[in-house]
Image 1 (cartoon, rainbow, N blue to C red):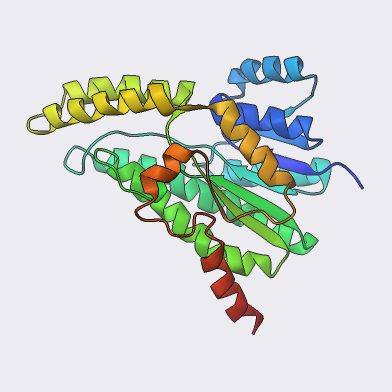
Image 2 (image 1 turned 90 degrees about the vertical axis):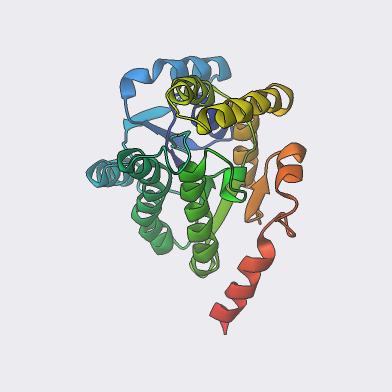
Length: 282
């Protein structure tokens, strides 16, 4: 049998970059996608260090034409997609009052509709093959709403609901659905969001400006003390990719679990999937 083929989104930096490398190390043929392939050098450098090769393809998850072209290209070149990793995302900081429609729609387009449309494009191929796995990177922000992250959390909550509903149905086709929920991560993506956030906070009118400064200040300590690396998350994703019966939900650290413990009884999420899978089985 040919090597299994993995399609990973958002691979120019951070979690996506390291996920592509770790999956290649695990024996996957990896198609690493990014909106701007000119940013591929960092990925190639890490792949060279690991002694693996990775294929790069352009993909903007906010464009249906781009999604279709990428998926059709992988099928034409490799004839299969065994693993989809929905990693591409975009951060945004602002309360409801400070979030304009353009920012809200952009946040939802990348973090939710991008995941929805990628999954919708790949799932028919997995269903036809009778096997496959879809791993989506969400966040503790998909389980627990957080101040000044209303738009981001709304998008991640939406992904959680989508995947929880899809999981028992996809199981009937031999397809596993998994969620990976990190807490704080120290990556270039997060650093960029936090830097941009400082400018946003400076422009906030009171009382929000002071409240945002307090919140970001306290969050900075959390990142410094408990933050994981992009590679930490990538190793978890690679392990899920090869696990025979993966949990539906993986909360990536003890700190993240403690953060959401008041809302989460079953940290694996398997019990909900089992309830509805049994109904589908009759």
